Length: 299
Image 1: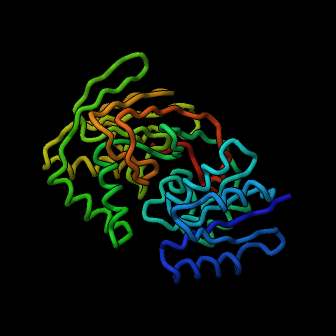
Image 2: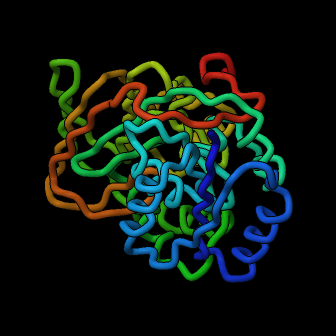
Image 3: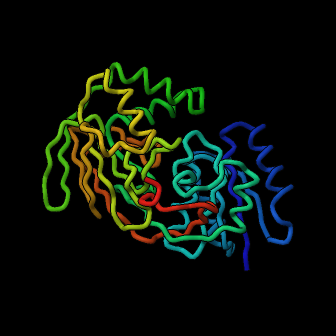
């Protein structure tokens, strides 16, 4: 029997959260048992996690951005509970990767009508992630964005452009497939899915279902190359850039000089100098979009 729990993140603002709750209440089928809960304390997900796992829900629906999706998905890893997403964040990386509609009412229809699939997840030290994780410029921007008073895509773009002028590449030791690579890099991204969000593809050939990461090393580049490089990412051709080196692996270890920021699905954290990544094949079931196609069929 289907029984849904909707977890709403109110961090987008009370007005937005109220609108989302009203929309779910109005449009979700009345004949399917469901409950709406609000994730009130952004620093504590344990109460909601316990509620999800103890009340025999068939589906847990994350209503929010990538951070909300990460928390809900992490709570139901390796269970029979199906993850759903109603995307309303800045990037919506996993939702976009799965072809889930960005329109609330349409996404709700998909939660009921579309198929569910098994996908891989990733683990970095003690954090789970589902799209991307990494060190370097992307983690730096994630940290800056988290402390910004303004949300949304344009705020992210402005921060990125500003930080491009001052950020410097760092030295990394990357242990992968029995080799040790020593690289100076602008960033090192471990991709389970192809994109960060906003259809910005760092690893366009990555797949959510192949049991492998695409490990992307972005080499130092001249500032004048930044916009052509960004265009390649938006057009799904990042892997053709001379500044990008890509490897595939089930596990990878990245060693930096010091403890410093990383991100997992865009959420920033400070982590130890050594980062150990492991792919967790077919570890979560999720409702995909009606027209979802694997990455290999898109590009």
